[in-house]
Length: 350
Image 1 (cartoon, helix red, strand yellow):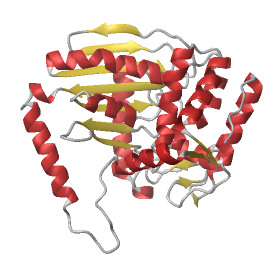
Image 2 (image 1 turned 120 degrees about the vertical axis):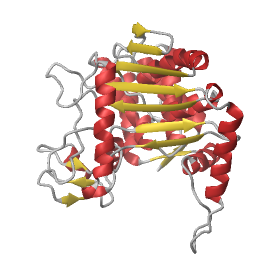
Image 3 (image 1 turned 90 degrees about the vertical axis):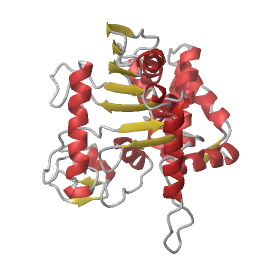
């Protein structure tokens, strides 16, 4: 493991993106988002993505400085095209425009198509909840990335189709961030680049046999990620299936199988509610806090120190990594060094 402080890693990632042709302000925003994922233990959505982003910029698949185009707008609706811009930039702008709509109308909905990777989805649930609003954000991969097999099936048919739900409370926002598959596809990639095996229950090979080898996801013929719930994950696969239809159908993007001309992008669906316009903010926060306290007070099994709610682990990790530094596995660190070498960027001391 290599360990870097948050500011050190953020500046390094920003310098790599800037050297690849990204405006410094935009590069800093993307780098901050990536490092924020590392801080919270979501390394699959952190700086391991820099090499991928730089490659996409060089190939014209990711456009620095792209404008967010509005294709349809009403008092409570915003349909947009990201024009292959950075997902961290375009998704932030979409939510920025939706928040005042939600405050005026009580509810607002927006979509984003043709977007670069939007990063850690929980970031967007956190941003919405920090405004005192409740939100749901979900993503598909434009029908191009197919990696999850249906229960009983061998070949992949849909993507991991994650969803985040964030709500305000009397304290820190409560945010759920999950894939509808057994694991995020990026976590398998991290295992591959760090030369580690996957836990049992994540993968099956191209013949449908259980495996812990991450390379089966990227070889030919390809293996599959199992749905949330394992081989019999009907609930996880069903949720992923319906979210795919909603995101692809409403955004103007694609569901699998995509047209041969379709590009591997993110499409996004955002729904925001203003509790004040419903039963009132005070009622919402009171009910949220009451439920949180009630769940945390559950009598615990032997060896269990505390009842953990969504976000608890990532909050604790963020606090720890801000104090002690962010650990990067050998594979991720070597990828960053490799990109730095091609761009002529100095590698920070670790």
